[in-house]
Structure formats: structure tokens, C-alpha cells
Image 1 (cartoon, rainbow, N blue to C red):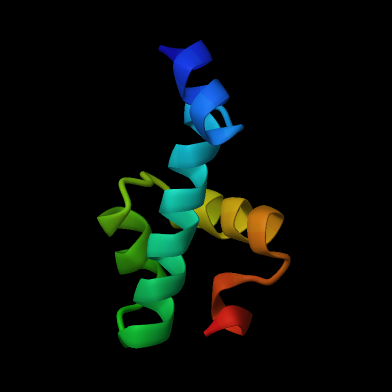
Image 2 (cartoon, rainbow, N blue to C red):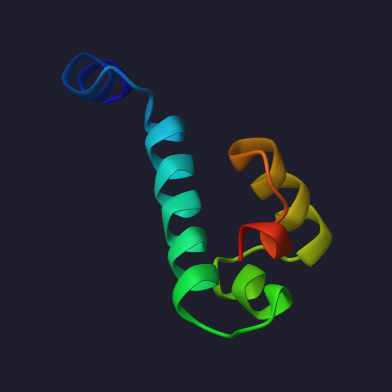
Length: 67
């Protein structure tokens, strides 16, 4: 499965999922007024602080600054 996905998209399944999660996070942060904690839980992060670190690592900005 992984080899087929990587040959088709030139990305691993994990990378595709991570991109989708970040895209959804950006959408929720930009288009809604939900608190960061609620966005984190909606995206299945158990810890809002982990979500913030993950988002900052991927985007370069904290969720609050991105908003």
C-alpha cells in the first residue's frame, strides 16, 4: 500500500495525512471563532498543547498567531 501511494503521490501516507490535518486546522482557525482547544479536540488531538507544538512545527506559526 505504502509503495503504491508513494509512487502515485510522491509522498508517504503519513505525509498525506499530516498535510490534510494541517489544512483542516488552518481552515478551522481561519474560518471559525472556535478556541484552539476545541479545534485540537475536533482534529482528534488529546492535548491542545501538543496540537499547538505540532501546528507550529508544520506551519512556522502558533495557531493563535496564524489566526
